[in-house]
Amino acid sequence: MTKNQILVLTGAKMVGKRFLSDQIAKQFRRKVLSLDLSKNSDRKKLGHPQLFFAAHSTECIIFESIEFLPGILDDILRFQSSTRKQPKFILTLDYRFESVFRFFKFPGKVVIKEVFPLSLLDASKSGSYSVWNHWLKGGFPGLMTAPSLRVLNNRISRIIGLICSGNTTLITGHQLNSEKLENCLQILSQLNGTVLNSHQIAKSLGVSSTTVFRYLKFLEAAMLIRLLPAFFPDGSTKRLIRAPKIYFRDTGILHYLRGIQSLRSLSKSIGQPDSWEAYVIEEVAKVLPSRYTLYYYRTQHSAEVQLIITKMSKSELPKQLVLGICIQPGTVPLISRGLRNCFTNLHTRKNYLLQGATPQHDLILNGIPEEVLTDLKSMNCVLISLPQLLLKLSALRL
Image 1: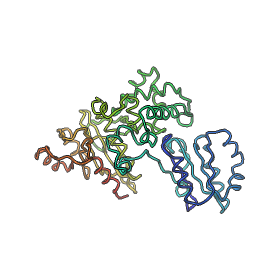
Image 2: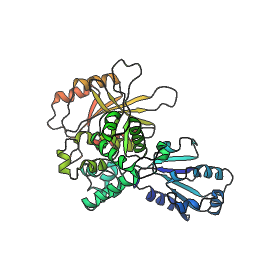
Image 3: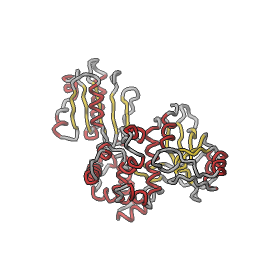
Image 4: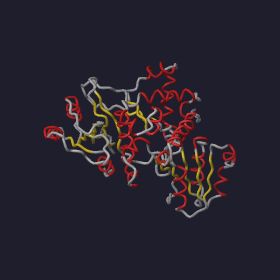
């Protein structure tokens, strides 16, 4: 922003974009002007954008919810090219940027940053917030600080209601039914961690597969779900699954939809393994630099590596395989023949077998047979806990 670049903060509703915008604006010691473009009264103030910007050229301007006035970014760029005396601009967007503004490609002029819910590494700095609590409640600030279960449920319900009742036209070209969107979320919560089957979802909702794809497109753009793409190496002769897998991006919302409201019910839930997968994948996404991409790898015989991390090449060379991560819910590693074959076929630089959540966050090696550790070493695989993995990934070189 010191170089007069436009900062665009994207993130799900109620993730903290407005609070972060205010904190950034204070650093410039300018008067802060904030407009919420979801309000018709604030949009009317921008009837003549160039005059508005000129009148507030010494201020820091925050535009919230710019999806309601997408042309404003064009107006800002036009104003910046015509004058030197400019306000600082911070824009917030409740949807993934590329989903709404596909036609904007201004490298060096627009900086896009996604605001994630609070990560485990940040939450654990308080000392009193364990991995189990973070996994149960999720990372939304309002959910982590909820003083009671009733307040927690009310806040999650509000997040879901705001997203499902939002303007879906910009994303899908159609205004989707909010009630059916909520029903779709309820169904997807039961399918978390499974390979996408649009016909199954369509049958449950009583709609066409085309409509289901619209629902999925909107929910993914609203950053409620993640469609994790399948990885299939070039020239591979193996029969591989190619459809994406469905994961919720915040396990607090997932557990609310499933009716899981305590650590006891989470520990006894039949859906604990896929919930742990969703939690780990999202925590990894929060710490990875932008040049790294997430996939999963699965054969037709259900042999699977839940997370593959690739690095985008600067040249025209194909993407580089960096890491393979097998996510298991228990603390004792289970090494199958299928897992060995997957790691052999992938040729990743390093492999990790991730243990399940433990109260102390530490790696548990007691009770693990020596032959199991030897097997892991032969596969270039290391047993690791989630906090250790996140620290390693956050230190990856760009």
